[in-house]
Image (cartoon, rainbow, N blue to C red; front, side, top):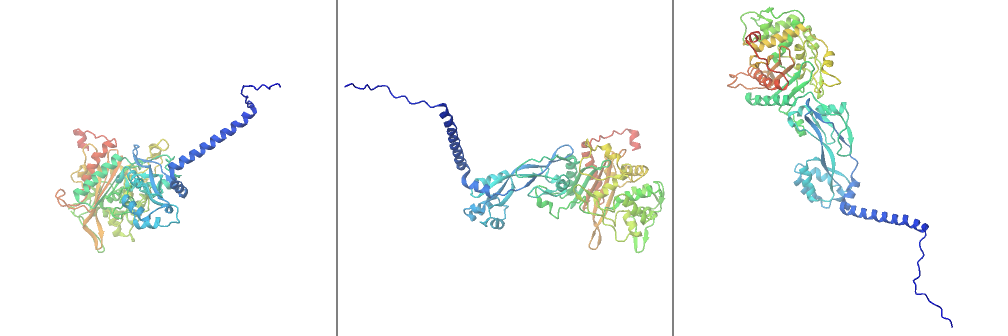
Amino acid sequence: MTATAISSQPRQRPEATPQARGRLLPVALAMMLLFAAIGGQMLNLAFAGRNEARLASAEPIVRVHARPDIVDRNGRIIATDVDAASLFADPALLLDLDEVIEKLTLALPLLDEAELRKSLGDRNRRFAWIKRGMAPVEAQRVHDLGLPGLAFRREPKRVYPTGALTGHIVGQVNVDNRGQAGLERYIDETMGLDAVSGATASRLKQVRLSLDLGVQHSVADELKSAMTRYTATAAAGLVLDIRSGEILAAVSLPSVDSNRPAEVLDPSRPERLQGGVYELGSIFKMLTVAMALEEGRATLEKTYDVTKPIEIGRFTIKDAHPSPVPLSVRDIFLQSSNVGAGLLALEGGTERQLMFLARLGLTEQMRTETGTVAPPLLPKRWDRIETVTISYGHGLAVAPMQFASAAAALLNGGYRVTPTYIATETPILGKATREAIREAILMPATSAAMREIMRLNVTSRNGTGHRADVTGYRVGGKTGTAEMPGENGYQRRSVISSFAGAFPMDEPRYLTLISLFEPQPTAETRNQITAAVNAAPVTARIVTRIAPILGILPRRLDGADAKAD
């Protein structure tokens, strides 16, 4: 019998063909990708949590608005957007409503508990805002509470680094970053906004203002000091470029902080430069004298008999310190004679006075980029007595901004000026271009004569404005003290004292208008409340501070120059 030989060698496995390997490789790769996706999703759920996923699904698409930066003429930030956290909740995920409300109101004391309970108590709601635009410290306090059902989203929030210094000018925005007042509203109306769904920077070009923050601060600081020094209830002041109309400073006190919207709506903090109208007193004599010169009825040397009061019906117009002799137009201005101003106005007549004031833009409402200016309050009946009282600043109420616009034409050669908060000296619209398109409304000779007597009113010891003089800066101007109306007529001890000034008067560039509301008599003022003893020296202190900022160098006076000045 033949035995069959059994080999001790192991059986060889058949090798996979190239076709088989080609089929297995895609399957293996697919399995690896599937397990990687499952693992990634498990990690994502582990870190994010089921609660966050449901919150994200509950959150609606909310559109807020990114705004352009606002800067002063030198590029310093006045308003900008920052990335801020906004807190919201999914009421359906809140475990204990009482606990949530208690902890949130402790962390955020300004929250309204009743409103919060109403907002979060509806379990059918899937989204409710709690607080938007939170400060980082507030967001951190809420985050540390670890309350289920709460989450944050990032949004642009408007902030104002200059605070109360520019509050009346820039205005404010709402929670959606839309402009509600001031320049913020102007931006919405003229430029539009970028609608965004998160903390995204605006693509719009920054808005460069005509304001100079250095000048703005100087004016605000001096007005605050003046309110304390003279115990005034309020103050307002502006600095205007009489060539371009650019507003370098505009201050109204008490001020408001745009970071605190409630202040903007506070009726005890009104904007006084263009938000209210006032009888401004004897600074209106600038207009009365200019009218007489413009119409050729008078020269600075022509005299008028001011020794006797003006009698019109039951009214008697007289001067506080009557002159014993007739006065020239020049002296009527220097001594601020009400009788003299009345005679000049009566000589021209009521119709011509109305037409002249209309030519200067004082009878129609005007506006700036911060909004409409309060409309002038004209007399219901414009007769001879109104013609006289308006000649020295009573009976016609205007906004200080509107008066400043008219006064600029008296000094710049006779051209109409439109006040603006937007910088005009740009490559597109330069200063020369803006001046070339201005409208002439007065003769250059009239403007030259006004510059002469306004300067003389400050340099002459007989002038009411001599306390506004600043060595080297050639200040000129006119005082005005207007009694404020009350329930029983005008209040003799409650006044608005104003000084309308300009510098340097040999070639005027800047107009200042300073008003103090209800200043009180002091030992320093020898118990007087007139503009000559308060608004005029305040103007001098302001010019001393702002002239160097504006590049106006003091002129050295030798003997000859001093006599000529």
